[in-house]
Length: 364
Image 1: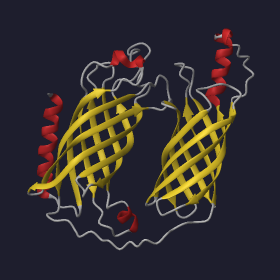
Image 2 (image 1 turned 135 degrees about the vertical axis):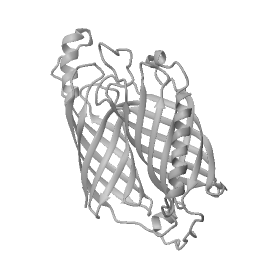
Image 3 (image 1 turned 135 degrees about the horizontal axis):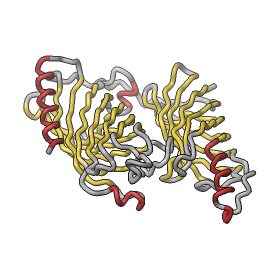
Image 4 (image 1 turned 30 degrees about the vertical axis):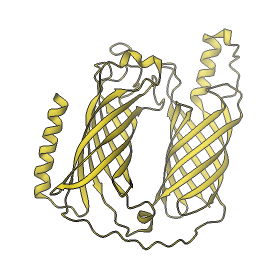
């Protein structure tokens, strides 16, 4: 009931603001959601007690094709979202999130897919004395992603419209600090949208079928961050990754990659030492090399100055067995000029996250 009252209050405030302010080509939407925590890991069964609910408030900027990338992606929106979620369990607490997002449209713009990435704050993380049952969130600040798939209709009554559909919300700190089993919520959402302008501009359509490619380019990336093994209080340690790869631009939207990289993961060095002492039955000497070398293939999807990165890798040098030889990487890149870029990526082994990586690179 408190969430519904808060939703009503926020929406009333939104109406008052909208009647006083004008903002060219932008709109607001407010969605109430309710659903279930997905059981992706049997260890979190004790944390699933009720039906989590909350709301997502979003500001959206429309595009009409002034730039070519907007036309290629069917005139998407971009914006910022704020979320509140009551996880219906005092052990888990409540989560607040702030995201940057894109909205993509299909089927004559009746179907909207929103992808948001950002940070969340949880009110009751793990504490070994006061909250030891919360094995989902080992830290107050989390990485969060949400996906929303909605039927959407604008301007049904004046500037107000409706939308409804499904939302998936994910929280994890990517092993920055143990424990970190994470939480995924699958929810149904329903909401209202309000356009600040009475009418939209005309969509610009000037693209041709011109083919676009680039010669092979070479990239060097340095990534770093901190993480911890699954052993609670084993300590947070920095890691360093040096990657080199070639990419081939196939179109305005896509490029493929092939490369190799070296991992210097200090948490793994500590884990090897710990297991050699604590678990002699595993026959670990403690002298195993903590470094790893991988080869990978990847794809890059370009959206204006940003790109979405996906990579699949395999360790060719693998002296210590940790989560298997295959690894995955997904994330975002932001280009600064023609050569330099920054990146924020998540490295995992299947559904098991190893680290959030922050990187800087050059494309030659």
